[in-house]
Length: 241
Ligand code: NDP
Image 1 (cartoon, rainbow, N blue to C red):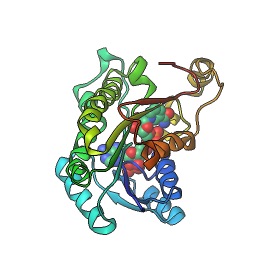
Image 2 (image 1 turned 180 degrees about the vertical axis):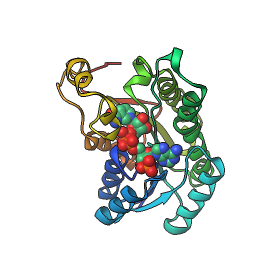
Image 3 (image 1 turned 135 degrees about the vertical axis):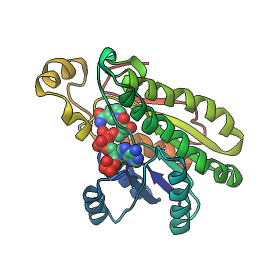
Image 4 (image 1 turned 45 degrees about the horizontal axis):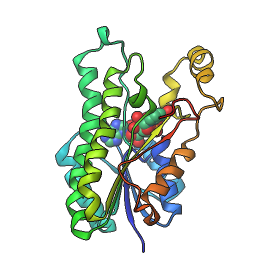
């Protein structure tokens, strides 16, 4: 059976690898993005995966976007909440704007998207929701009180919703990546990367986006029906829960 999947923030980075892995698994995939049209166009040209632009922080835009994808591809079976941003600052310098931008995209965005596919999944008695959290939501991180709060929030959200979805055939899980070599990492100074971050990772390297994508592909597969409410940590051994 061909499943239909939405990957938010699927036009680049980890999301692009997830979208491709789900396509290779036989899904029809829609990848969403916020504003970088050039990256989205290049991604579609390279992979054939259609992209859709809206801000996940906007509930009505999510509702319209999901309806458009369902009109194009059919009912959504799989949602991967991957879109995320950082707005780092030590707490004494963190502005309300930095706080709210992070919450709006990383946490409200997860509500907005999940809420708009949940009813259909319940009716059809099948669904797979995977949210991309972060090692920094599990262990905390200096200058990321906003980001860590959202990523820890993903885990609580998932554990609660997994209980609600269980009898309806919907699994809800988290993948918590460690440091992955995407553009998000390019904001970290080289000295901090080599002297602070890499020495903390037992495998001695950053992860590759494809390594996160494979974990997501498993959780979204029909075979993973007994796995729900869990967090798969993929972090090179940096933090063991
Ligand atoms: P990137 O910055 O490489 O890509 C982010 C993607 O999300 C882009 O497609 C972007 O669209 C989209 N996006 C951002 N904000 C919004 C929004 N408001 N509405 C819709 N789409 C949006 O991120 P990564 O691949 O590095 O990260 C993906 C996820 O993994 C995030 O949730 C992140 O927190 C998490 N993560 C990443 C780690 C890492 O090491 N990279 C480590 C742990 C977790 P556009 O291109 O238009 O901007």
